[in-house]
Image (cartoon, rainbow, N blue to C red; front, side, top):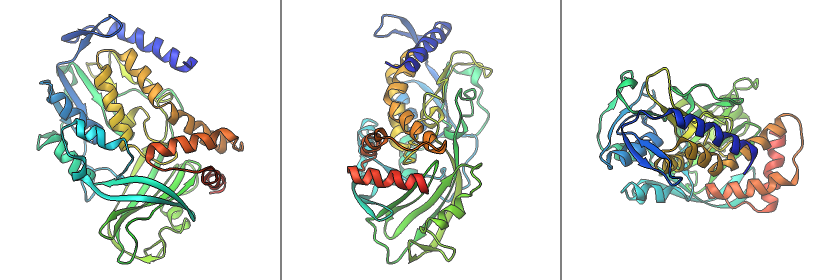
Length: 376
């Protein structure tokens, strides 16, 4: 156990001792009398919020789902490439849904500037999945009367709308993404360009459509659209990787690239809103800084919440432990941003972490990608 995890557990344990006024109670595995909320407000109707809504209501809890503002996008959700790794299917099956219903394309190769890397990545219909998770339930678009609830779950992603500011250096990447129709482009080629806290991508959605996007830090002196064009994935004439394309829709968004260690606190026992607040998903740093993958990680974090919702000490410890690899990724990029060259350790980390997304990096693949990160 690292010192950081130990201290986080100590702080969370102390915070837990203040949290005694929630109705239903249970004894956790450490024999400590802990409380379980009956009335819950979920802020954020994305993947984590919708999945938890389904799981908690199935237990007979009173749960209300809130979304402060409907994203102004054609699909009705925030910008996302819709790619997931192998961990996606078990979470969806656990919610009582057939994961195959949402898979719209399968990719077994990823191209990193000419390197062809084997992979197993699924492209999903994320809007349809969210709709089915909440099964037509009303999403409230009003201020949350937090004092009426035993707990609020902050699933607001990059907004982190209800938790206090993160303790670490928050890295938030601005993104731009377009859905394109490309008559002669292959549906089985996923392209990624990496940089230090920036990147660009083509995610094929099947039926000759794809998501083409890019992202970078707002203070980098760059902008996502210009960087996307410089990467060669989308040019000024609308050609996608050299193929003529038809623009279907586009949107901008943001992505938190801050790991869970620097995204603490994850839970707040007393808040200005009038009830305890627990963060889930991107709001507490579960997006991969390398790949930008967040859907599977958000579902994994939501599952951790269900395991530890009676114990904030255990929840914080589980989040830090489960997503410690994100912390390592962030440190690799921070080192390069500071001008330090890579050591052999990032090669191992990149290969291990790529497998979580379903990408099977070889040694030379990892070395080439880190070289690209250093110069992109």
